[in-house]
Image (cartoon, rainbow, N blue to C red):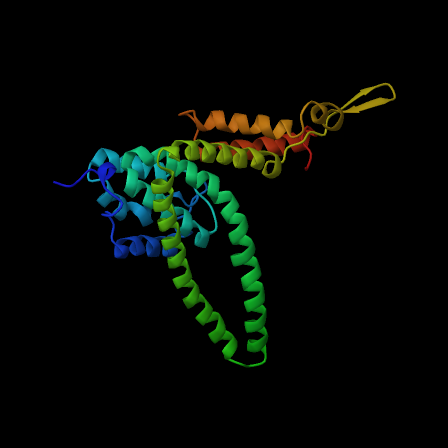
Length: 277
C-alpha cells in the first residue's frame, strides 16, 4: 500500500530527480505550444506535471482535484515558470491535497512579477545583445555567429533545468522552514495575487466614453469631469465586473464574451459613446 503524501517526510521524497526533470522537460517543450486564450499556459502546466502528480496522488479524486487546480489561468515567461512550477510540485509533494490553495496562491502571486523579470532579461536583453552580435557576424559571412546562438540555446536549456531545481528546493524549504506559518504565507500570497490582478484592471483594460453634456455654452465631458472625479478607471472596473459575472454564468462561454465585447466596442464607437483610450 502506498503512503499518503500528506504524511510523507521530507527525507523520503516521493519523486526522483529524473521524474522531476522529466516534468521540467515536458514543460520546456510545451510551455506555449498548448496555449489557449482562456487559461493560456494552464494546459501546458497540466501536461508537464500530470505524471508526477499521478505518483503524488494515487487516489483518483485527489489527482483530479490537483489537475483541475493546475488547469486554471497561468501565464508567465516560460523559463521563469520553471521556478514557480518546481516550487509548486515540491509543496504538493510535501502536503498533498492540503496544499491546493497554497499552490494556486503561489502561482498567481509570482507569475506577474516573474514575467516582468523574464520578459526583460530573457526576451529583450539577451536576444538583443546576442542577436546583434550573431546577426552582424552572419552578415559578414562568419558562421561563428550562428554557432554562438546555437551554443547559447543549448546552455540555456540546462539553465532552465537548474531553475526548476531551484524552485523545487525553495518549495521544500518553504514548507519545512515556515511550518505553521505557511497559512500566513498563503494568505499573504493571495493578497499579493489579488493586488496584481487588481492593478492589471487599470493598466490593461482600456475603456472610456466620449459623451459630453451640453447646457448652453457649458460643456461637461462625462469621462474627465464626472467619472474620473468619482474614481479613475471606473469604466474598466465595471467592465471587469461584468465579464467576471458572465464567466460565472453557464450560458456564457469565453468565446461568446469575446464576441460580445467586440460588438459592444464597435457599436459604442459608431455611436460616439466609446472613444479610443
